[in-house]
Length: 99
Image (cartoon, rainbow, N blue to C red; front, side):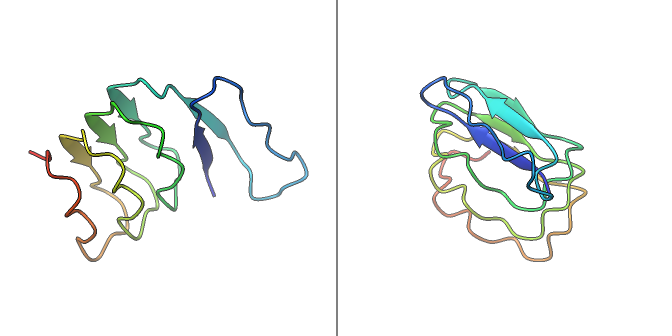
């Protein structure tokens, strides 16, 4: 499982080194416009709430099964999810700027 976080205060959250599920920590810039999380073995979309400026989110070649937790990314214009394990396209109604 992939663990990542988007921080809004600049202080990195320290993962528990004894947590077997914690393989990697990616600290995202909350002001990022383009976010590339390709090839990261991500199995669930989460912890992206502070990315208020993101317009392009790349989540290609991961293990994602469900489109979820994107409703706060209202500036999002481009969402790349191909080569995942998604079977139903859902939960995109809040993303009114998608092209």
